[in-house]
Length: 196
Image 1: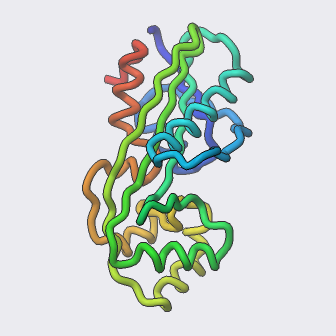
Image 2: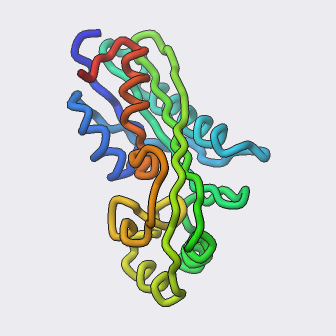
């Protein structure tokens, strides 16, 4: 493909920042896709379905277009079989952080890409393990008061102050932030888009 424009179907400031790192022109599309998933699906299917739903919703608005690829993502945190999305309120954030403190959990990020010229869809996911430091209730409350946890899956931001509560990760850092760039670059290559 000639010079390609990526169209990110996300309002996430983190995903916007990350996708720019690929060095391709980027546009942004409003995403109004339903984020509810019916049934008891495994987390990898949840993030893939939601990412693809978001990408398809944006593609339906954009329609056929040469040299453009819609990109959408979704991220969840999983501990003990429970999928933790964004907290509903501060009490929910406290519950999540208390659950995760001192333990290892999994973060799943799904990506879906749609080539606007022919409608070809590629969807996949990445998984990273994150171990959180032990935290006191007071530390958790102080972190919540910063406001940072409120729009993040699992109620923390590894790229922000939340980095101070993470002990270690096993896997791709960008999966935890919400857009696994290596996987995205590989998917774009399959669509004929060269990042390098």
